[in-house]
Length: 537
Image 1: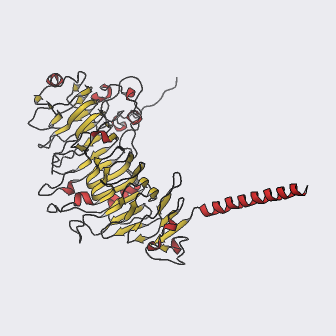
Image 2: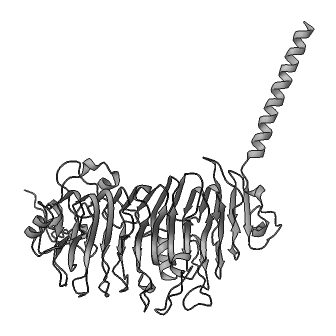
Image 3: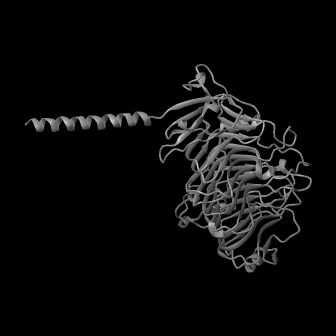
């Protein structure tokens, strides 16, 4: 009997110790909030911004999964990540109201190699058509209250004290993965403002984020979204893949020589959507040093592109007169596999812009429901689209106002070439269509030369708004073929954060409109009659 009692007591003691261990473990794992500033404040214990620790006091013990590091006030020195989170339990770096990292020039946040499971959050969304973007556009060096977190250089550029070629917001990623960067203004890393400024590497060394060529490490996801990135050389630089998924969306990007670079070796999936690329003319130089692109593709191996999805993007504004490479997307070297481009809108400036919309090279992929509106008063206009590669699906595109609609390079093959609509011509001395060495001045000649576009149409005018949205009676409305069978959800939904296009779903049956928009502009509908009265009998 006594032995039984002893066993019960021992078991109860064991259970208590186990329970105590669980409680202690839970207490140790409890997430912490750590507040930091440039200098210590108040008690200096990091309990809140009024008692912030200094940024240089950050240590590995602070970089624990679940912790949140809060940035307070103006921080004038960069810092290094000193730990990683875990799946489902990220380390968060949070900009408090009015917080900013502000340096004259130089590197700012070091991702320290293979750091992972990190969230950098500025606070308020700052993508296309947001109040944050409007405030920033009105004052690109100021600090309006309560917009969002800021990362900036204050003295780097053509007319500024420094011309540094390695001023970078996020750097040091050597295999970093599962990183999310959102709700930030990243600005003025290099303010290019002089045609004489052709300093070496300023276009490719000053960036918001870089995944560098020599990176090694694990696959994962890197997402950059809902932010405003302006005045830098190469805003987002993807130079390597490890099976990585890159998500780049809801970004307002302007005064950048390249918005996104996709280059080098290594397998990757790149999703670029719902962004606004515009106004890169400030990067023109008298020696034509740089070329300006929304997306610059120059991958070394086509098969490293697991998928490249470019959709729901808007390119407009003044891209300058520097060059003939494309404003939306320019491809050179290997034509990437599975390059899918759809629902993109390009509106060309009349300020002597000579660049086409797309220089599109692909090994398989789709190019459908895109809209390109040129400026017919610009004599130097070139082609809207330059297409090359193999097994390309080119349908439902709408083109107007260019000197040439479409140039198809020799050797290009199509799975489909049809249902495209061509509106009024711009000024130019070349044939409207070019298939290999054959120029075509009429639609019938084009259809014969490239053995396609049997249902394509040439109309006198597309009848669209300045932003490319079909108006009442536009020939685009019934010109496309239904492409629901492609199974690409964004192609059917036709939506864009920031309302850069009409958020109306495309039908699952029946014809689609050609071009990027699914429906007519509400502003184009006839006004309802006025002055009517009702009579009751």
